[in-house]
Image (cartoon, rainbow, N blue to C red):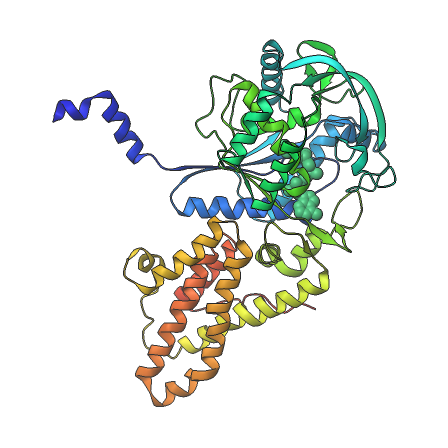
Length: 501
Ligand code: MSP
């Protein structure tokens, strides 16, 4: 028996049994052309919620975000600001970090594409691709949108302008290095998407990408620029810099400390979720996996594209100038108010239209009059309880057989599926609103005068429900969750969510 346990394979099996499940989640890395707005916060908060949730399930989580700092757009923005591009990038990258801190986002690494280690790894990976013949020298001609940093198909343009950024695209014809995109690699990509080995969600995007891939032979993409100085020099041709997207994609590996060797992958790879906005779905579903396949690196497990936050009928964007600022939201709604409003704004995966008026309305209804009011009423009434009932909901939740366990599963399923709005609606419909109605119906303050046992029964249910809400809200509204628990433990609260105008 002892000999049996000591065998190598059993040691591996034992290690595996005690190893935590890993969960590696990424956001896109954001361009440093301007400070972040709520569109960027939307993706990053969602990733933070998932990371916190998976941590709470005792998984070994790695949450990566960062900034994408090279390319023509940033080179131009730095020139306009009369700044050295590195200094320009340093300043804005810092802004992203500051905003993520203000929004209580807890990432494990913040990667910058101007980090020396990232640059060296990109060069190494490109050299491998070149040596393998996956990259070759040629010429590219097309319409370039500098805000997308992408070549556009002529048929996708609207009056010669990029439909996303409403700016005139530039006709470019230049010598460049190209990445092979068609033939066997395209066929294998289709198979991997079809079988969900490389899963694209929501399913409408999987269908969209499959019909795009099946409908045409992919055109090889340019992975270098000759006239853009602000970029990583190609190791095999010093006259070219790396195309900003080829540089950016590799952050998903270098952010884990990868040094560019395809045979030495970080243990967290492959990514469990690449969270992105739908604007960058196609490049993520084509160029990125094809780069990986040429490198013989396994593909990410899930590419999840969420919809856009729109304002005035168009995608909220720095370039269009219709963005709601994070500061304005933080000032009005606080950190958790902002996180709540973004995560409950609409189906994650669909576009959502946001206006300040609607957000104020929702904040007052759900948070000030909903959760905030419930907490202060229950707290006030609990003063009349001789003893507070058992409050450790977390302990109760692991105690199978308790009715709360089932409720917890319902909520978890929504979060695991990235249906944050549904999870929150579930909590508000079944607990917050119901509890407020239950108070109206039972009038506990009257019961306290005439029927103490009944009063205690009603209060126990209210306490359990509000603490259950607090427990579930942990990944979405971490401070609120903590404050609710503390309010009962210390029998005091500064109040949650004052009304706003
Ligand atoms: N740098 C590239 C991504 C490279 S990833 C290898 C880029 N950067 S970006 O600054 O333009 O940010 C794009 C991402 O920001 C979107 O994919 C999305 O996640 C988020 N959003 C930016 N504006 C948004 C909205 N209006 N609504 C929702 N998300 C938005 O593209």
